[in-house]
Image (cartoon, rainbow, N blue to C red; front, side, top):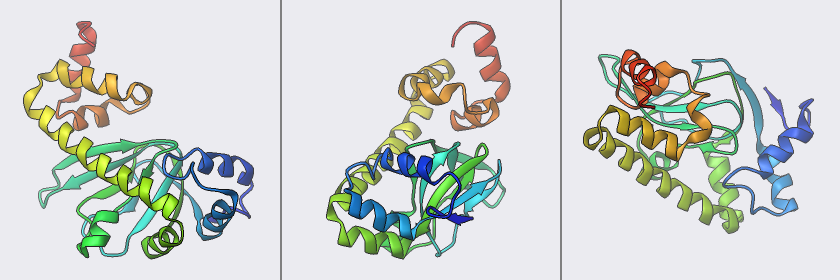
Length: 202
């Protein structure tokens, strides 16, 4: 765990932050202000960044690796809602605004490096910088829409259709995500995914 300024890769991290989907419109002053609030953390594969059902929330900017947003029930059955990789972000902003516990966990799919800050810090920062808040809130709404569309396709598309949709929408992730995780996201068994590949259907 390190600040951006004291991190040995600080120059790379600064470039990565400028490329982030919700931060790229910031000017230099806002960038410097945000950097002073951020902590850079390394996560191992399978490590939780955020647990489902908590009230202490953070804002995450993915620098390296892949994260997943996942919901689980009392029987430990899981449903993956989305993946996030470099230049993407993860958040529980809606739950914070609604004053409800986090409805999902955020877990590292691969080894990952993330820049994070507390949700109160992030919200206060956005209030000072409306040029960041507007694209951020639009992105959050778009994420919710994408998750709803994904959930619908699990019911409407057959196995190969689900895989092809993922390949079309996320070609950069298809070869990077472990097949077990991808199969879970598509509500398939790993064996079904492998069989589709062997038959040349994907």
